[in-house]
Image 1 (cartoon, one colour):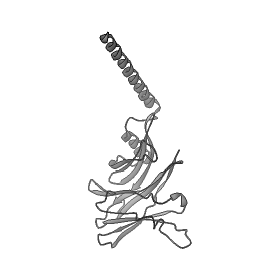
Image 2 (tube, rainbow, N blue to C red; image 1 turned 180 degrees about the vertical axis):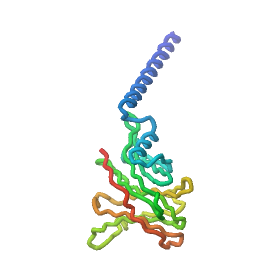
Image 3 (tube, rainbow, N blue to C red; image 1 turned 180 degrees about the horizontal axis):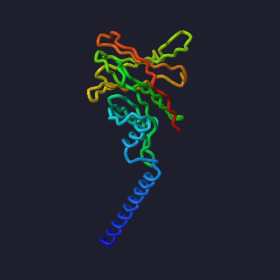
Image 4 (cartoon, helix red, strand yellow; image 1 turned 90 degrees about the vertical axis):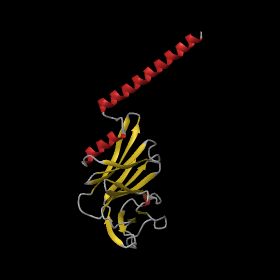
Length: 226
């Protein structure tokens, strides 16, 4: 009796496993035919590279963004001429691309950077600042958010909300192939108050806090997901 019961349970498990495999194969087939999803997040990243024309990039870091999508990932990637911030997410159909913001690092300059505001309707958002530092003298990096149209002149937004700055060795600094990169968030301000006229400026200082370079981060944008 026990052997028969054990045999029935084994057959049920096999049938269940067979159904799961058939369902997985069906999803893969649909994805293959209609190109609506991918098996791995890196494949979605490759699609972003093709769309933005950056060429192949290497991953510097990645992090989950559960505030936007429970299965969302943000990538900071690079090659010799480009630094890019990208986002992908896992849906029912597989991994899909969301956006990519490339920054041209081909020209000589002390700081190359960009910014991105990523918001989902009726949910929290993230404001990223990212890029590459090519001047070895820069040890401190601060980012200022300005409103040129302010009647009192340029004003640093959120000055009472904290200092948006990092120092070499902080978690926001990363090295890849001998190049230095940065990525951090500025989420302490309600950016919906500043829909237009936002100017993002990166300022680099040496170890003694002497000014080394000041660069406008002109490459950026806003993404609102449903």
